[in-house]
Image 1: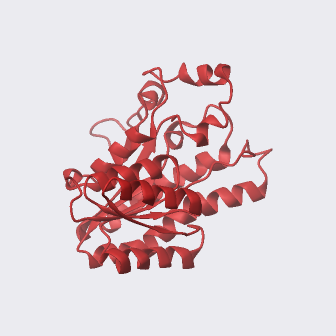
Image 2: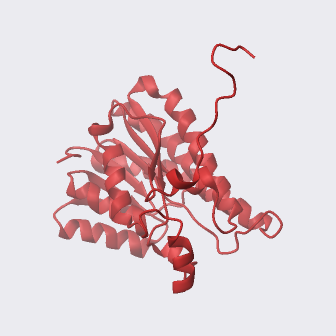
Length: 267
């Protein structure tokens, strides 16, 4: 079992990527603290893990609140004795997120508070717990749009995921000598409720699929498999990465940076 004797805290575990990752981690031997503001989904996740013979507990937390984040880390340690893996996965995509002109300040603030501040607070209180455990893995959910922009305007969401990438790189450098690895998981378009609520017609789905080289949407279970690699000791030399799981979309559309100076030049 790839996560035997490890303890993992997963935010946003009540649905989508978080839910499937919680099931996957538990199947690989981890004890899981399933965190979500959605109590029904979080409890269902824990119940499903229990039915499969795994170990899990639910904790209700709003990741945009410092007190909740501090308490969820305390809950992981008090319930399971330590924390080895922190998956900062919770995030939102607001229905009224648009371009700079049409996105309200309230939508911008809410998106940043959950998607960026939530990751910051998870790390603020999670890093000391990982230190106490002798090291571990932090996984932050970003997105392919942080590298290439979205096909339809969602400025706050895209900007927030870019911030997650930058924060991940900085944290990875800060904690590299402490046996704490920090990586960003960048999903492509997925067949999850978060995306399908926008692509609510076959025409809209096909317009998006034409840009994905593999010709299909990803599944939350496939992202869970990638998270499992980053959580496990198999990725012991991986930190500061933007781990793409996107069906090839960024390879098709993102052009690598060109060298800014000629070889041998100091100018």
